[in-house]
Image (tube, rainbow, N blue to C red; front, side, top):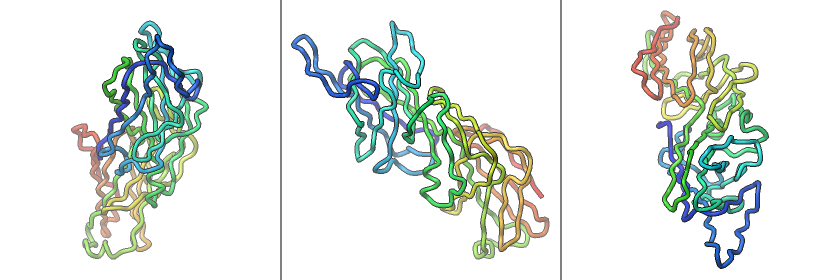
Length: 299
């Protein structure tokens, strides 16, 4: 899984915009005014989600546009931006609730985009909760959150590319047979996996993509597909304890470890189960390889 995908904001000219905070119907130009041109988005779906899936019909994103004044950037506000939280819905193409337009041919702007769309009362602290039970594909998908930012965009007919980051962390757990198991016996066993002691609630700063874990800790049940147990985790540091529990035919194997889940990274845990030592061997590599072997052994 790659950590980014691109959204292209395609404009044909640079003129007056209308978003959620202003008029959205295209006004009739006077003879001295050029025709206003709508801002459109066209995402690349080949590497689109942390959830390993492309965008699907009905997916929604929110877009903010902040115009610059004399070339100086402004702050992203809860309300009163040039475009406030315009919702685009995917139906083969991306369609806004109402059309939006450039202000004029000279005014540069900053773009802020996020997924999934939500009603936003605070752009600095948007609440978002992951699903504790991500064992279904739908629950796993719904725990994805992405933000993108493109600053100092000049009005142009060329495509403006916004890189959108997956700001949650992802854990991938694979099981291997150790002492007392064979690959076949493990595959035939009744196996379940859970991640313990992680917070699922968060607040997100849409201007920076910063995630802050909130609330109390709980357990997360991952989604199983392609021989991998995977879950999206709010970035946070978990104190040492039974981080991962693997239950095989009623017997628990615990990985005792503290760990820091990093935003936009996928952490791979290869868990070797051993009946003789009741141990778990773990190798961890981040989504973006830092060149460090973070592995260890838990008993």
